Image 1: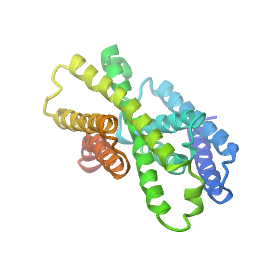
Image 2: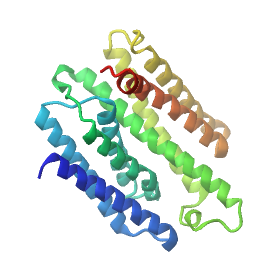
Image 3: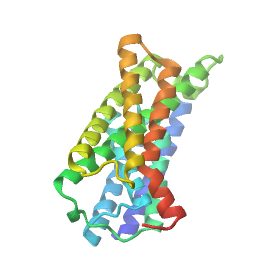
Image 4: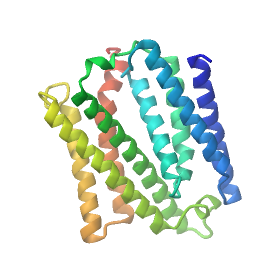
Length: 265
């Protein structure tokens, strides 16, 4: 089986899993086969990534390749969390995104960049950055879902979709658990950056550094506010999304401009 066939299998199973999760909204109970197919999609996605890595002796850090890798990790983390937390409904957003990013990676594949040029310090920084972004991506989607749930619960009667979700308090607890874990890895990412990168405020890194620090301040402030002042509801949703947008600009802003607009690597 070649790489393209593996990618097609992954994309197809992502979409089938999404369809089954959507069906869950009308049936009010989740068909476990949706998660099993989701696992197959992530496994196929991983096989494709490993196949390309082996084929080119390296990983491409292009816009779409990086986006595909992060989408795969987000989907994997979601499935792991779904083993004991009621977060499977987030797959309705995460799985189509993962399928789309993989399809774009296949279509716009670029020359790989050998990982051997990175020492263990830089590899640690890159890995913790990707994990932090992936976890906080899930938190942002959870915040959007929480906002929608809060709005719908004020209507009478709420839609089937809302009735299939866990209670609002449980959803908020899950949001802050994700934020706490994501902040831990974001802290590691910043720490390794300051320790292992010679000039983190160099011209080509300054916007990433500043935006990441601002996002860290927002997430840390939100968790402190939750602990000391009981912040929740709209405050939590608003600042989670603001912090994630800052990270999104930090991680992908320059790549988007350089690769897709200015056509520079």
